[in-house]
Length: 176
Image (cartoon, rainbow, N blue to C red; front, side, top):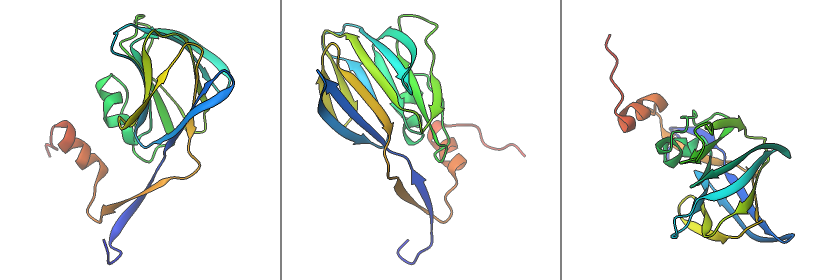
């Protein structure tokens, strides 16, 4: 790597801001995901989702995962979300145990502005890559979009994306 023998790859990051009563109360970055989740009381959360200021749906669930392609093979995958190729310019929105079986994961362009309006939460928080969190309240607005800068990941020269997926996910090997 130090001799310049590597494969560079640009990864997108998420920027999240939380607004309360017209004021920004938290801002954070995430490489993998921003997760809205219920707290210790175990009550479902009710919220509205908007993409590019267009109403998408109302949801009652344990939460919502907004994932980058990098994070698509982590919590989002465990919650039933799609695997997004690491260089894909997209984000996934994955419901966590939705009350309605019609709520399904969706993928959107990484140029999308995602807003979540909290309509009912007894005890809930927003997590950033599982490293930090912020407690939220009713009527908080969570805004998520692609961060302006990317993260450059350096792979060994022999790196193969699908080989790595096969190994980590225990997929079958090539037969012929």
